[in-house]
Image 1: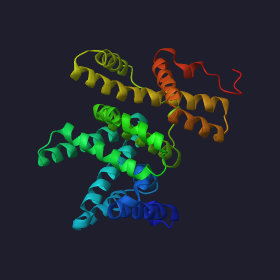
Image 2 (image 1 turned 60 degrees about the vertical axis):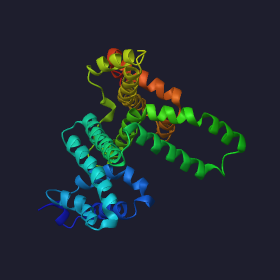
Image 3 (image 1 turned 135 degrees about the horizontal axis):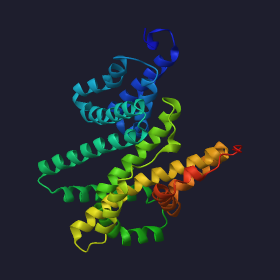
Image 4 (image 1 turned 90 degrees about the vertical axis):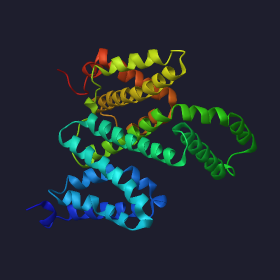
Amino acid sequence: MPPALTGNIAPWLSAGVLLVAGTALVCIPEYVMTIMLFLPALYCIFASRTRGILRYVVAFFPVSLGLIPAFIEGAFSYLIIITCGLLMWKMLKRNLPGMSVFIPTIVSSLIFVAIIAVYSYKSGATINQTVTLWVKTTMDNFLKQYSTVLNPSDLSSFSISRPSIEAGIVKLFPSLTVIGTAMVMWFNLVIASKLALKTNLSQWGCPDWVIIIFIAASVSSLVPNKEIHMIGLNLLLVVSIAYFFQGLSVVVFMFDAMKIWTGWRMFFYLLIITQMYIMIMAILLGLFDNWFYFRKRIKIKGDHT
C-alpha cells in the first residue's frame, strides 16, 4: 500500500503544503512570488514521500483552477513551475543532479521566449521592442518603489546611467534569463538534495566538451561583428554559470573535508553569491577544476591514509 495511505502523517502533510502553495500561486500570485521560487523543491519533497498516481493528481490539481477565467494566467504559471519540479524529480531519481538543473532551466527558458514571441506577434512589435518595453517598465516600477528610499544624489546618478543600464539588460536578456532560472533551480536542487533524495552535490562537474563551447563563446565575444559578438557574449555568460556551479561544488567538497561548521558555510556561501569578484573566482575555480581536479588533491580532515 502506498505510504500516503498507511497512516504516516508526513505524506499527507507534504501533500497539503503543496496544494496550499499551488492554489495560492494560481489565485493570488502577486502575494506569493517567493513560494513560486521554491515550488520545484517542494514537489521533490512531496514526491519522495508518496508513490504512484497520487504524485501527479496532487501536483496538477491546482491547474484545474485555470478553468476559472480569472485564474488562467496563474494556472499557466503554476503549470510551468510544477513541470520543472517534476523534471527535477525525474533527474534526481536517476542520480543526474546536473540534468535536474539543466533540463528545467532550458524548458522554462524556451517557454518564456515563446511567450515573448507570441506577445510580440500579437502586438505587432519585434521581440527586441517587447523586451525593451518590459525592461523600461521594470525600471519605472523600481524607481517608483525606491524613490523615497534613495537620496537625491543616488537618484540623479541612476537617472544619468539608466539608458546604458537598460541597453545592457536588453543586450544580455537571453543569458540573464537563463542564468536567473538556473540559479533558482540550483537553490531548489540544494534543498531537494537535503530533504528529498540525498544527493552528493560536492561531485558536481561539467562534461569535458563544455570547455569547447566556453572557448568558442569567448572568441565570438571578441569579434567586431555586432550579432556574433552579442551571441558569443550571451553564450559565454550561460556557460560561465555552469562553471560557477562546479566551483561551488569544489568549495562544498573542501568544507566537507575540513568539517567546517554550518554557520560559517552559510556565511561564505552568501559572500560567494553576493560579491562579484568572489563569484568570478568561483567560476575560475570550476573552470580550472577540469584540468587540476582539485577535489582529488584536497585531504579530508582526520584521514591519515
